[in-house]
Image 1 (cartoon, rainbow, N blue to C red):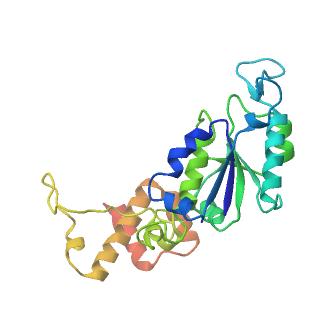
Image 2: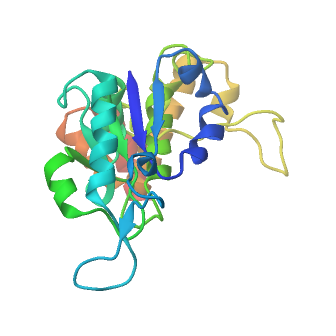
Image 3: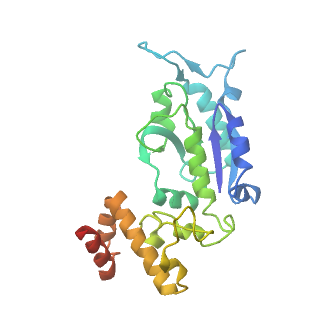
Length: 253
């Protein structure tokens, strides 16, 4: 798959694409990333990409024309259709990125990712060209680059062979393999650390007992921190009678 990123700060992506376990996805070509600076497509000696907003107010607004020229160059270079590679704008008004959306992107041909800056982007360009809005949550960042990196990282780690253990991502929080629950706590050596031991079930060597302990911990943690996920699991009939017993015991404590 291929992601083309429109950004005024392409240098921010260089260390990201070469660091960590997800670099394997980029080095292998499973995920191709191209960086495009709209300043390269701006006219005039100053290569201006922003201007003051009509109506006044603080800040600057990214201009439509340099973005349009940059996007046209990307479309020509990709050679595919808008439907195959939609234009994604990272914006507070977008749908919050979640595991289901990441899974969909990881199964796609990719997209064109637009990283906004300043006070925003000329609305006429948004209305005409943007296909999808994505947000990380109810807060504002100085630009869309961090959101683009979050999406790329989440997609890259789902590609075959990227993680050391092929099944690692199956145990992630929100994964359907865990019925959409949060992940359970994890422990490693030493067995005793600052007076705290490892839960006996994990030391038992009994596979079924270990798996039941992990399932119970996922249920209890999710019920405590994200009861909405428990409600969703119930609605989808993903909880067993034993699961409900675990939750019922917690409610009586």
